[in-house]
Image (cartoon, rainbow, N blue to C red; front, side, top):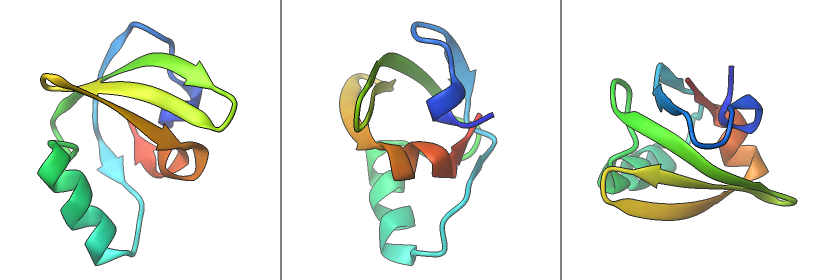
Length: 70
């Protein structure tokens, strides 16, 4: 399941990140978003969702939310 399908408030473990963009992978890694890390969807929004990774909250668009498999 991807983050767009995830239930708000439930903690998930990132299984895979489906992107071929190395810069995007490096950026996500710098945020703490990588395989094996826990992630929580705080809220779903029209253009994406707000997620909590470690001690930070980030808004991500729907395309990126579809690329993160939990």
